[in-house]
Image (cartoon, rainbow, N blue to C red; front, side, top):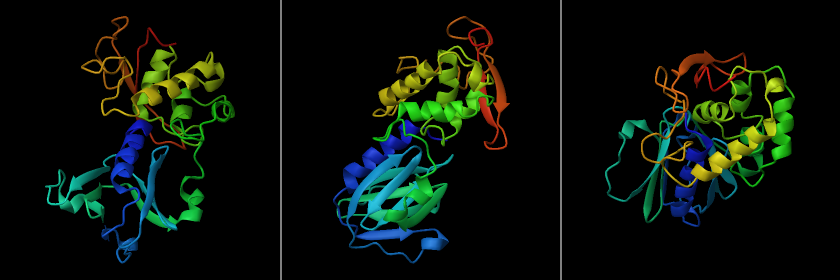
Length: 258
């Protein structure tokens, strides 16, 4: 599932071609909005909120979430799409651009003054103007017995961290993802590091937590059975989830993390 920085960059790219432009065509390929026609309306802006995308078009908001397979593309008219047309869920066109949302996990249109019904549950956005470090810490500490690896993924605590950042943050802070929040030393530094990493990666297509943009971009994520880049111990892999979050792959170094 795309992380907050991926969604932020998608919103930034869409905003660059859509903001201030009049829609010449809208084609919603989902049953609930198949008859909705936004031609003639002006796109005010496209913004991200955690892992959610919001196209603000007059008094309406197009809300989308990429989930596992989704993506938004921008094309010049006449350019061949990079994904098959049957995967398109919505097409928004202007005089200059064609933007396509493929395999979106969520696609809906809500009144703009009701955006809170789709994103109001989210905690402070690590990449948003509402970032609030103290509130994020308070949210995490509200469940001291919960595993830190699950608490970081819970978008109600702080918005933007996905599976990759979860694993990398726990490694960089030397904490097992299964360790309870209440036993994590210096939780403030983990939250600060999450902010630093997402901010550092938000404007580039290649994500890195190691500082290396070419090759070794991750410390532990996806590296099960391979030697730890720091100590050489084999990286472990397991599944972590609870009644609120589905099971997800998690990776850790049994020597560097305690």
